[in-house]
Length: 163
Figure 1 (cartoon, rainbow, N blue to C red):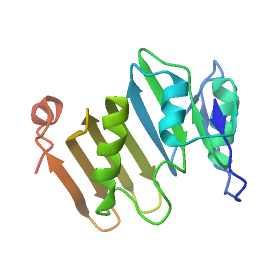
Figure 2: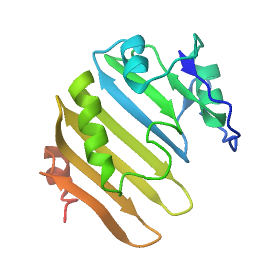
Figure 3: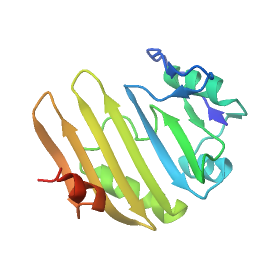
């Protein structure tokens, strides 16, 4: 299911595997929502103009404009595109944690991912039932982590990759 806006976007090529499945590449963000239908996710994101598309077509179009909400994959519904966060702020800005909390109050467990290649920007956050459990953003170009909230995860501790 995909919602398309009419604004111009720079197309970005998705990375394809030999089975024709596209992975998410750079200059994008995506949500992973546990145990929710594509319709529930699209409703909470406020997507109105919907079209049912396969993974490859939806992913390719999401790089141009709009948001592709996939069928669940191992219990996670993925929403991919450039429009999750309202324009004008990113994961390092003060409104981001509240935005994610509101989504997870309505959807349960929500994880957010984003990356931008040029500034070496990587963000990840996890919220469950309105509680922000962990949020992290690293910007390599500036050599800083302007977002670092919540207790380190077991994986982070095991990898000793926490400040």
